[in-house]
Length: 350
Image 1 (cartoon, rainbow, N blue to C red):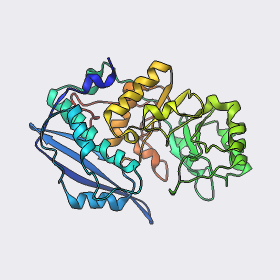
Image 2: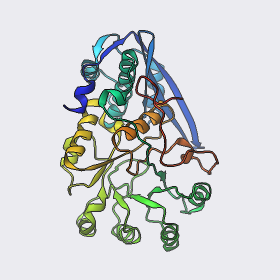
Image 3: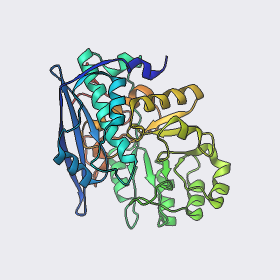
Image 4: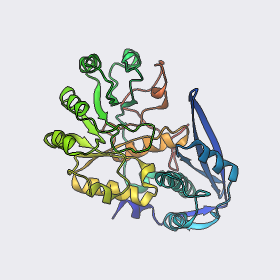
């Protein structure tokens, strides 16, 4: 029985929905905006979060309001089929990934609502008990690069592990400091992005230094060229992927059979595709780890819950939001993170 078969026929009654905007000023030139989708039915509410990165698209959705014809009696599967037919944006966004991000917001809200209407938590329905979640803190080292912020977190949380975005401006001193600190679990090369603010073109020199400096670290999302493939081939068992992974077909199409992949729920769009990926990885002995999308609300707890259910012991990039702060502060939970699911639904307690 597939994972999706456990949830596909859950009854779902939607009477209406609401949209709530969230925002966080990250720096003077960037405000992160997301939208909480709130499905309402039978005295219950189901929540999801749209993590589309374009703030104007978030504002347009909020201004448009709840215009989609979602009211009715469904199952998780028939509701998903409905979403596949609806225009989730006024016009098609430039990045198709945003369609999946928005669809995931509605699908996760539907799963939350259906489970709350049934009076059951997700773990009970899929037959998995949530476990404490190993997590890493992720991000870059700034411009110019420095380990000051990283060291600040290590002073308060000595066991903290990191997933770092490597850049060509990393100096010999930066590499030496990181080797001394011995806190790096994975390096994200950002080589699979194009036309975004995080693009990192292939740099064989950088790749060579990463491979040599961090012999035990995962190497995520390299760009593949004849030069970089020659470097990566001998360490292909350490290569993992994030941005290209939206389906089982994407996993099967990878350059090398992966030992592990980054399974970001919002990249899959639908519960069915996400759960199929979990099944595929489990059947083939492929590891999985979770990844976030700078969630500001319920979405962060939902990806932590999925990690707790399906891949708790891997370097999950689902750290509590405080680890994204510019400076370390005391009182944050340590890894492994003990999650506390609500008695019914698909979310953690507030």
